[in-house]
Length: 331
Image (cartoon, rainbow, N blue to C red; front, side, top):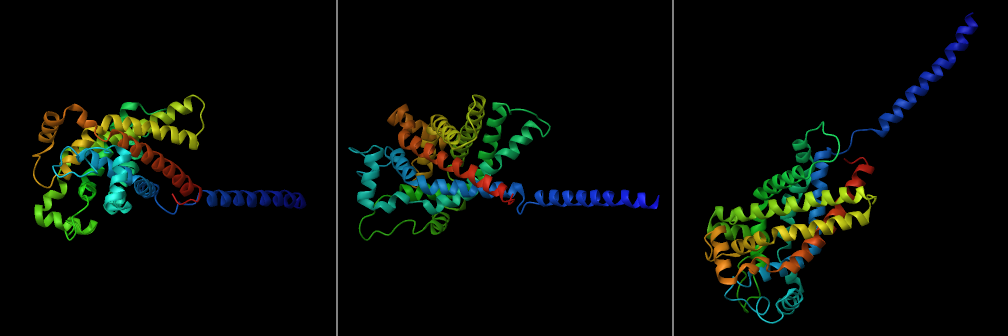
């Protein structure tokens, strides 16, 4: 009998050891991520937005010059007259000011994307989950995706608006006469110049059109990208690069159509250091009276080229960075 007990005990012990091994393997596979998933999402979003900004800022500089051409009384060949389309303006800026001028504002642009891009994109999924409820099963309704985009866009730009102002001011500054010092010697120095000359509150100049513009464009970008992906999955497309590119281009076009008018007003109000416009409504009224309704779509082609390119760069990078971080247990 004792022998039988021992014979039975040995396999039981072996089974126990096997279970312990399985449990150890499971713990190894599910070990705690290196970074909190929420913080990891913010970091991935900030990096992806910054990379997209660097790749597409020449188109953004051209867009700003075209949007400001009707508002500037001292515009040069880069913003007026013949060759003032997208390619003509780009060639003129490069010829008159050097090719580096196309990257004017890149430093505050990166500052902006670290703050604004990180917040608006990184907060989108948590806010969407908050609106729909953690117990929700199935696809999120489109109106809640839009609400999440509006919310995170507004939050992000309230924090990052000073960086947007400096970026627009530096992009708007054309070629200076020989011996004329730059108004803004550097991106960091520009904050101090604006505060000394116009006051601290001036850093949030144009906040109202900026919130409107960025909330609308953010909702259009993120909600439409989300919706396009969902639709493409519904017709059998895979979660791959082709789907990401198609969704990103669609999102860029929707965002451009919806946000172009407020984008023009934002550029003009933020680029105005002479007091020409008293605010958002005054800028809309004067632009409409002096230039007509099509002025609100000034720079549409470079705006779409920039937004489409920006979305492709950002979403492709974001999808790959998130996958890399998850596969390596970073988040």
